Image 1 (cartoon, rainbow, N blue to C red):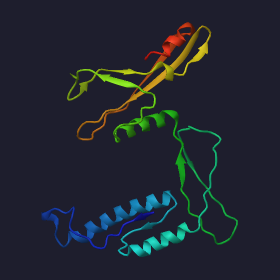
Image 2: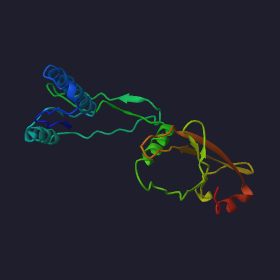
Image 3: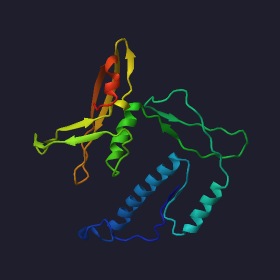
Image 4: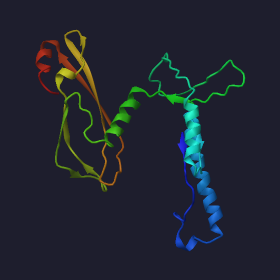
Amino acid sequence: YSVNALAHRGLEGISAEAAGIDVLPAYWQQVSMNRGQTMLEFAAATGGRSFFNTPTLGEAFSTMAQDLESYYSLGFTPAQVGSGTYHRFEVKVSRPGIKVRHREGYLDLSADQRLDARARAALFVSGPDNALGCTVETGEPKAGSGKNFTVPFVVRVPGRHVVLVPDGETARGRLTFVFAAEDDKGRQSELQRRTIEVPVPTRDLEVMAKQSL
């Protein structure tokens, strides 16, 4: 549900030289359309309702409360997971006259997309989860092309957390790293992905489990 309880409109967003009587109707009409369209699309895509320019919050919340008194929570297990595509929902009812609102669908993220999203999310939260006990050591930044810098670093992963698959006399694993950076102005770098193969002789598995890669 999206609610805009704007009861009046000021002159924010209009420069002094443009704040004439003639420009106000056109300006606010465009602003209103943009805000309303965004709120409407958000509500429609998630199966809710949009209350725009509603100075009486009680009326909006009352309607929302009535909706929440009667609903069904439906769940299902998709046959395929990680397709990387968007899937639409269709809900049908057998009773005539019943109107159903529901979210339009969902994006089934692939494994790579989920990994990229987690890397981006880590930039917005302090102290991200580090269940594997990995460590990162950074070196001295060096000037690169333009305003870019190259920052050397070493990532250490405890060997006991690396999944290895037996392959004859060798156990093989694979580590995928996704790197992202953000400066003091909130600008983010492009995601960098590195995949490293980890072959370990079976005779060294016990030693590897006690060390870091």
